Length: 350
Image 1 (tube, rainbow, N blue to C red):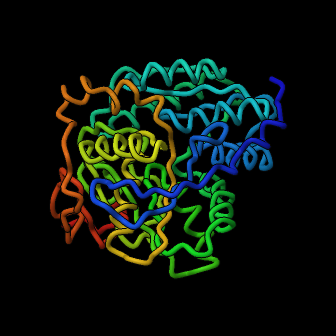
Image 2 (image 1 turned 120 degrees about the vertical axis):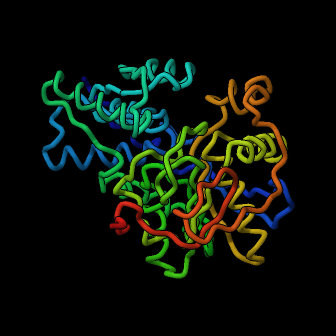
């Protein structure tokens, strides 16, 4: 497969939007990096970083196939990076991936392997990862980036941090969705090199295990996890928020009506929490990253019938519930906790 290195010039340099739309309450405003307007989306940054590093280390040979699990966004980034660097891409997805995203990934040349059943414990993520290993055994010389544990994933977001610093005189609070842990770790480390006082707020989904909650079925895709990715930099977070789909649907729709710039689950989630952060810290410069755009969610978040059938329409209060211990209660609505620890390293009771 012949690469097209000129595509790499299209990565990054995405616009920065000022958001003042009530979400759902009025707030002073925050800055949002609109990553869906970059070629390959936000995760093209991570995909290019991982493949370039693997090539430099000799782990990815010229023309070899790249195999990875994805809920959609990284898949788009890998399809982009594969074209740019000359590598076929096989993406392991699951039955819940939207038909529009499946079509888009195939249009960009990716081959899809579709998992039909979630893993009994690790859900769709674990089922996809098991299929990745099976595919690797059938494709000689294939390379698995392992986005959840690959340090070259967060390293790919140094450029995003530099773009923020070039536009903003200061950033007091950074709000990031957390899935693989890549962009939150990569961006905050670079920001704190200039200002160690930057606060980092992580945004997760109810039902995700990342920050110590029990695993439960999740409506939202693109943030959250049923496993514990090593790229999550727990020590960097000042607090974590879990949000529910009703709050996020409301935020996405308000953004669409009032800011025009909107997106999917991750975008709505960080917008809700960034607006809250701006409201409770007057005078602070709050920044966030909108990872995706709205188009793959037209049949879900922005579809009245879909949302009504699942009870996703409603108006949130605008305030999170305070939780003292992430392991003490299973949250079902927007909640906030100022205790952040790696659940995989917690002592197991005897």
